[in-house]
Amino acid sequence: MGKGLQILNGGPWSIRGQILNLQIWSQGIYVHEVAHDYLKFWVQIHGLPQKYINADTARDIGNRIGIVAEVEDPRMEEVLERTFLRVKVAIDVSKPLPTRFWMDRNNLPNLWIEFKYERLQDCYCLNCGIIDHSKKECKNPTAMACWNPREPKYSIGLGVAQARRLKPRVERGSKGTSST
Ligand SMILES: [Zn+2]
Image (cartoon, rainbow, N blue to C red; front, side):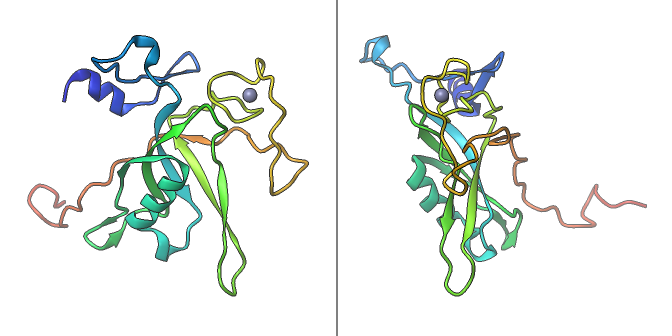
């Protein structure tokens, strides 16, 4: 993989609080035709019951919010390693970021399933939820929460640090890991 692609896949990057939207400039197109509406994020999905914490659910939910690029399997050798899911999704950032959805359950209270965006760093518009401008420059009406119409929908905390990578377990007592 070339350095350029490594940088592209390791993002999104931000410079002084502004998201840098890197896109591939294909050979056949004029520079102003490069689409900047889609940005890839690792999205964390929090709040799911344990039976749904699997790669299939991550793909299904990812497909509802954008174009799935990569799915993380939260299990390593049959052992559940996380309490949430991670899916890398290209999201249309000309629209407000999805924040959560209701999950209906039979005979149990509904659950809010929440999204967190890795490396988003809270530099999107907190007024309307769109990435390409700040709250000061915003001309859109304030997005209100569907769960409480008097509360704004967006607040600090939608962006989170990148989760550690899942690594296969090392057998205890194997060479080099035993302590005396
Ligand atoms: Zn705005």
